[in-house]
Length: 355
Image (tube, rainbow, N blue to C red):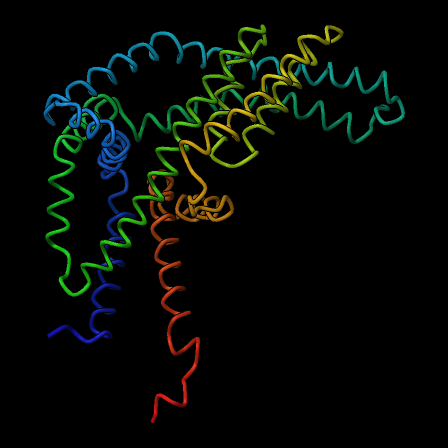
């Protein structure tokens, strides 16, 4: 005999509260396991495909691990040092860019840039603030991340957790499925399947889109000679998960830098604008339809709200779990709405039911 609905609601509410308390209390301890699980979840389809090609799960995991290790080594040797160097140079160049912008506005709009004007003062303050605080902010961010993701967590525990979870992923899913309450197993399986589809479409799909576009922007901008092309490409790629924001921020930053660097040489400025226009065409017509699809179910506003709420409550760990939890909550809300719209509470009672 199933438990009464009120008792079930009580037990599940307690379980949810305990889960949130553990997440808040053991956030830093759980961090490597959350990262490892996210990596395993992201790479599980690759392992499944290798299995369908004839590899065992162990061999598939080994091949993925070797490939990931080679990619990490190449990035550590080639990309990361250049990225850090360009970021620091951008902070140092900010006052010079502000002065150039001030000179341009003074020449074109002298009445706006008079001595003591608000715009002139703001430009000077922005440039000086970025130079004085930019390097400090970067060092603080790196040291803060380093205090959380120390060398042991980053280079030992996270990869080990990811490898073991990837190796036993199917077994873990089967074990969890065997522990589901029998009365609610069909509904939970359906909800879990919907959550998995949403996460797969968003995390795997949008993650791949961000990676492809970020790489394209960085390489293309560096090829045309933009001074901080790698930094701009990384920023545009990271922000691509929010529709239009990546292109607007990255394109605005790139074109602004191009105006200062290539002023008078309009061909290169136009080339920078064309690069982002082509990127938008590729994203909208090829990458997003094929990799993400049209039924992701995560509205950008809902995503930003989840990142803000979970980040403020649980810190860095909250940012990591915000997307999957937002997807899960969204699926549950849609399921609840469908149940409500088919219930007597919504449609009302039919007098014929009493006959």
